Image (cartoon, rainbow, N blue to C red; front, side, top):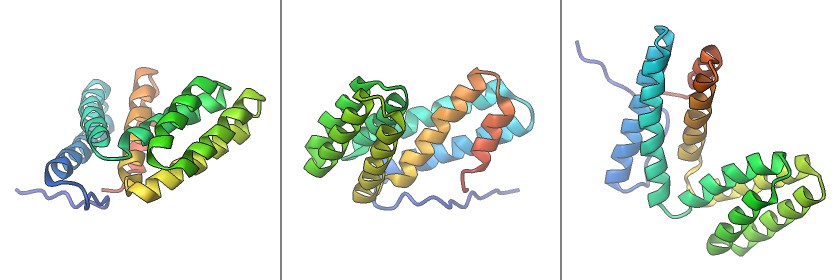
Amino acid sequence: MMVALVLAISFSGLPTQLEGKARTALADVAKARTALSAGNSKTGQSWLAKAETLLGSVLSEVPGGDLLKKMDKASDGAKQGDTGAVAQAESQAAKVDPSLAEKMGAAKQKAAQGDTNGASNTVDDARNDVAQKTGLGEIGDLYNKVVAARSLLKAGENLKAKNLLDQIPF
């Protein structure tokens, strides 16, 4: 019996080698989801670790990918009033687009003033701009879900992790 995985996530526009890594990562996520459905959280976690490594590698190798990862950390940091993570993303954003750096500067200022919701929203807006400008939105979102699912599994939240993976279109 032959099984084909039809991908709903597009990796077009990536160099062939990186597209292959991204497709392999998505297949690993599918295997993790299957393992979690069968109650095998350790196996699921192992497949997610492989997927996270591959997706992180893809994001590190394409222009704007590292910025997306830093912005994700900045968003989490902004929610906690951490201006350091926002400042790192601001520095990286300046290399890609000065207007993004301005948004990150505004987010840093809001975080410093204690407006964590405003800071987080500003970072998220800037992240969306980066995703649109680089075309990496789907890969960035997939990476974030894999990281979040791994965290949930580590915390023993197997059902929440599976539900998160169920949101990924295959």
